[in-house]
Image (tube, rainbow, N blue to C red; front, side):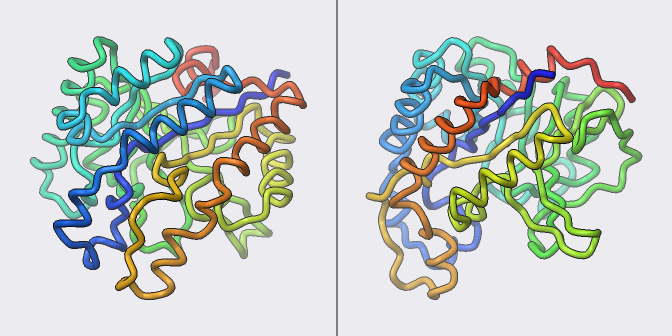
Length: 288
């Protein structure tokens, strides 16, 4: 059975991390790094001739439409998906605002890219039941916002009757497919997140790769989430933020590109196939 690796990028600025908001000044926010950081990611993918899915903040794309061209020009297989309109927590918004974010982001990204936007990922995984219903009604094919790591209180939760499939971590609801963020469970007592972000930057490469290969023993895919700003060691350093928040944001950034390059090389050497999320799902017949 062919095994797939799905790399996804949440395309946002370095200052969009919610736990750093209160320590930022208007001068900090004026220091955009999106072009430099995104180009680093695209160059890395080009070096390995692989495609990825890019969940783009529509507000960011409106202000910087060039980023859509950068992605689509780099590789025709790269996928544009929605990361909502703004990087606010969805479940803190009114239902009408959630709907507006979901519908407007899809239209903006489709107008800019000239392609259908099939996927969605809520900022900071802040999904809720109403957002899922909006995604169904807006015509999205899939969502990738559910991160079942309860120790992080900012992640959203769902209570809708999702149907399990034969693929671990993939569920369906009406016409929507939910692709969850991978976690490692130990006897239902301990849950460790290892699907990407700061967790991936924190873990040694050998451990991250071991968990991925372990996951693939019982699954035909593994999905990771990354951010362009994690590949940018030259981004501003917010000294007034508390140590733990600075550590959380900046840990592993200097070696992140090299680490990810090594991970891709190691996984490619095992003949795993790199696909976009839409490519994987379109070739997958889910048994419910």
